[in-house]
Length: 198
Length: 102
Image (cartoon, rainbow over all chains, first blue to last red; front, side, top):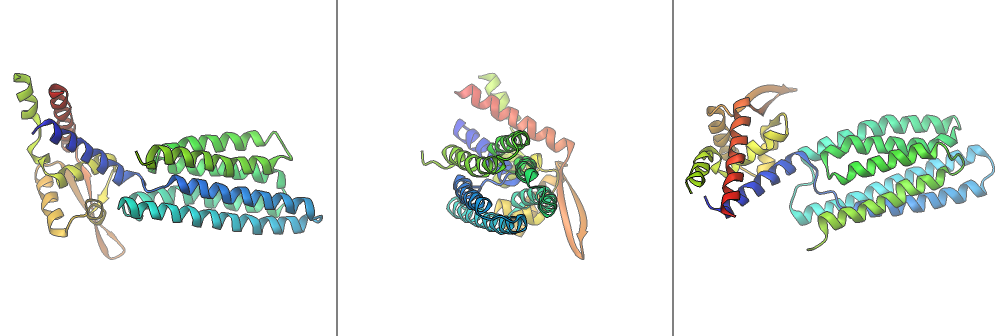
């Protein structure tokens, strides 16, 4: 065995360890597109809050805007990741993807139900801090199964969520920063580190 | 030069094969993986994978446990203590070899 074969061997080992334990098809563009959807969503939500008087209507409209934003962000994120998976030839649906999905879905489902309860009971001030903190926790849970940048995104979301508790009334700005700006920033970082053509 | 030969001697022949090296790498970082997942990750055929698994099992590097998901059999594989040791020694030997040549 010569040096080249030894290095190839190590490359194979690394590849197999990553492929089997991490979801490596996640594209930076997914983060950027989800961030853009979030900024639009926040903008619409801001307009709604200013223009509608009755709180019942606000809650209803916010729920609609929130759902549309979530679905849009998710679909666009999926599209970019799907394209990356096609490009790199790593199947999108495998062991790592399944584990990542479970890690994300469990806290998101529990947290999402919690947020719905807050909306229902008009605890609007806690919605943005709740969304950010819970999303941070979910990302932290999932970060073991994908790129390490996600763990830092998770910390950022949690810190932002907890800080926003102290700034009642600015929830929407924190929400836009957490789901919009942070997604875009981390999306660009991930693209530079993993996808940028050398 | 003598130590160089020694480090090559420590390379494990069982791991010369790409599929076997792949199976061991995956089991190092996952507590248990089933047959279909291994097949998918290695992009290998049933027969080919089965023969490599058999080799590793005979060496005592991996252990097999048969279970059920509903009515379908689900065979999962894990690395054994001996397998982990052998794999680490192989990695060390690779490392030494590369260091000495460069």
